[in-house]
Length: 63
Image (cartoon, rainbow, N blue to C red; front, side, top):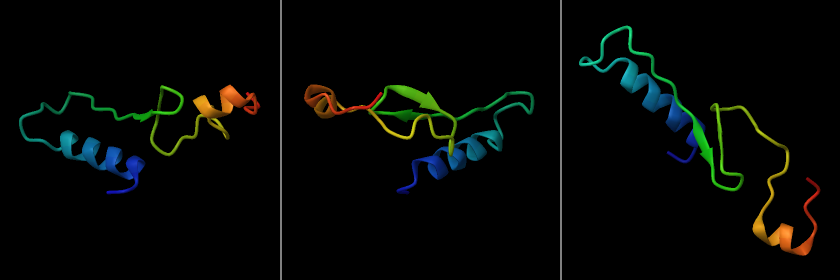
């Protein structure tokens, strides 16, 4: 699956319906943003623009 957000939600749903988990077990999923090192909720954007090492070295990042 190319869409990491969809893959995360699919994995969460699989775990929620796993027969060995009790119904009261709470399952959440987060996407790890490699560029920023942050965790985010699927389909929620952290920032419009992501800082990269190359942009930082050039001084072109607007953050």
